[in-house]
Each structure stands twice: as C-alpha cells, then as structure tokens.
Length: 419
Picture (cartoon, rainbow, N blue to C red):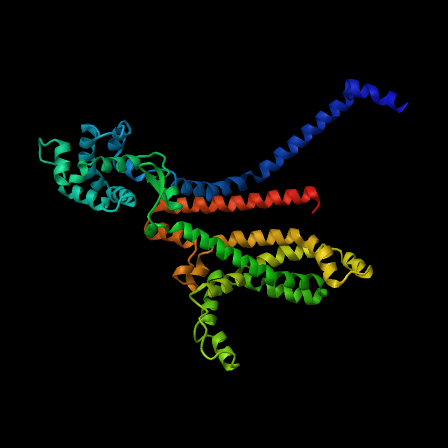
C-alpha cells in the first residue's frame, strides 16, 4: 500500500500544489535575503570605500609601474615598440631629451630617477645630471647629444632598464620581495650581500611561531582555570585577562622596555634575591621581543579557548575517572580532544596577529629582531618606495591567506573524520 502511494510521486514528481508552495517559499526567502542585503548595504559601501578599496589600491602599486610612464609618457610609448636589440629608434631619444626637462619642472623627475635607481645603482645620478645639462644645443641630434652628456645613454642596457620600468605591469617588486631579479637567462637570485627579505620573512615566521607556542603553553592552563573555577573567582580572573586590552600596545611595550632594561625591576629583583650576580640582557634582543609579544597576544588565545572549554561537559571526565582511567588518561583522551578546536582557532589568531607586529619589536627588539612589518613601514614612510612596500605586503598577505586556507582545510578534514 505504501509503495503504491509513493510510486506516482517518484514517476511524476510532487503534485502541482506542492511545487507551487515550494516556489512561493523560495520567493519569500529571496525577498528576505534582498531585504537583509539592503539593510547592510550602507555598511558594505562604507567598508569598501574606507578599507577595501584603499588597500587594493595600495597593493596594486606592487605590480604596476607608475613613476616612469607618468614622467616620460612619450618615451615609454616609443620603447614599447622596441624589440630590445641594439638601440631604440631616434624618436625615443628625441622624446627623452624633451621630456626630462619637462618632468623636472613638473616635479616627476625625482620619482622616475629613484625607480631606475632601484634597478641599477647610479641611474639616479645619470638622470639628474642629464636633466641639469639639457636642453641640447639647437640642431644637435638627440641621440648624439645624450651620448655626449653621458656615454651610458649609448648602451642598450640603459634603455632595457628604462623599457622594463615602462609598465604598465611589472614583476620587479614582487621578485625583489623574495630576493630575486630578472636576469639574462630568466629569474635569478640577487647577490648574497643584497639578499635581505627571505631571511626577514623566515625571522617573522620564526618569531610568530615561538610567540604562538608560548601563548599556548601559558594560555591553556589559564583558560582551564577560568573554565573550572567558581563563577566569582572566574570573573576576577577574567578581569585580569582583559586588563591588557585597556591599555594600548605602545604603552604595554614601553612598560616592558622599562621592566626588562639592565637596571630595571626584573634585574634588580633577581640580584636582590641573589639569583644572579650581574644583570641579564633581557632587552633589545629576541628575549625581549618574545616576552612583550606574548604578554600582548596572550588574551587572544585565552578567550577563544575559554569559550570552547566552557562547553565541554564535566561529566565525561568524571565518567572516565570512575571507569578506572587515571587523571592524565582522562585529560589526554577525553578533555583535550574536545578543546582542540579552541586551541587551533586561538593559535591561528595569535600567529596571524604576530605576523604583522611592528611596534613591539621596534621598541624592545634589536636590529636582528625586526620583522617584515618594520621594512614595510620603512619603505612607506621613509624611502617612499611604495611599490616595494606593496610587494612585501602582498607576499605577507599571501602567506597569511595560505595559512588560513590550510586551517580551514584541516578543520574540514577533522569534521569529516570525526577526529
């Protein structure tokens, strides 16, 4: 009887009234989603205008050439038609001879000269000295005049550098961000004395991993104490955990600089207790960076871990103990696996935040402890090489997104396997 009732439904699909009801339900859901989107549309527009678009515009500087095309547009246009063999056409020489003085008056010469100097040291002086000597005498050919002013204008390598900076897109900055450069036979490593950024990225990940491990070692027992304590005690402990959020990172880092210095509170206390005979070097090195960053980032691990631990039923651990398990076995096989989502979420949060730290290493770290964010700040604020700053940011962002994707994948695998 039941199969006879279901068989027409399988052959012909649901009845018309059910299909109509399903369409009406989908329409209601679409209208509801559209209404919700309209409610948050102003927030999305504000977020895009004040956050997303400026960041994308800044990151675009890492893959685009703007200085040379803005200063010498006719020259770059003439060079795009050059095949790289020998010297470019006389039109390129004439355009450059006319545009160098014009760019000097317009204020764009310095940026173009700096961009060429990033590629080959000494090209800034080549451009600025040529600008001082121009214009050429009337009737003198531009090719002959430029070579007379500086013999490097007669070398194909000079024009190849200029063509490489003509844009509009470039991989120059991204290659430099990983200590690579274009070579005659393809991409090659920069000389060892100029290789900087791969080591800085490795240092950044090393410090971030060490801070994450320290936060985990200190934060797990603290989160467990918060989750298992009586409500009144837990509230006071939570206030202490949240206390660092009430002061800025700058203030906290400066306080650690005072505490860790040679004549600071920590060294004087250790000497007073006769634990050390002379002050320890706790600041302007890796020790100071790890201590200060761990203090700043510890709450970011404790809070998500505490939220997960609060949801772990205490009856399961007690049941394991009543069945003969030791406290260590009950913890390792019952309690710890249920807190792993909080451990992974908190550790990922701390690690990602540590990757971008700048103030704390700058205040309590030495020259060999500066992270990649310090170099991004240098290129942005001091040397004004925004292309290099954007390229370093792109590499750091790509590494961060890769870690988040790996975390999402591992989380998905864990959910599917139930482990």
